[in-house]
Image (cartoon, rainbow, N blue to C red; front, side, top):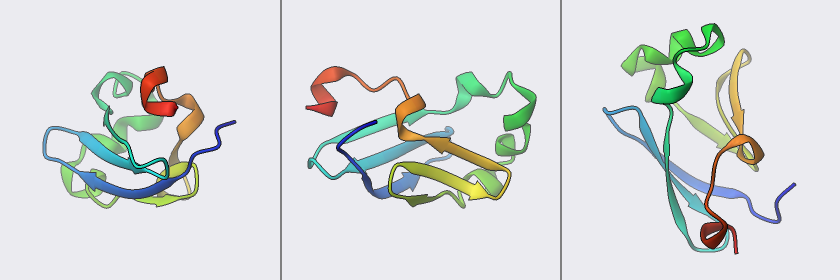
Length: 80
């Protein structure tokens, strides 16, 4: 996977999440494009969405809702 980890997150009202990465760079992850999938339906509830947590290379909300760093479309310049 990556040699990076998530060291901080901040969820916003527009369903984006600022990810602070261990390489010192920041990436804005937009979850809206994933809302078309039934597995992410609950994340459309803003109060639930804003409870995002992180653990290493994974964003998560509960046991059923997570999103690994390697599945995000992160530009190469952010990864290096």
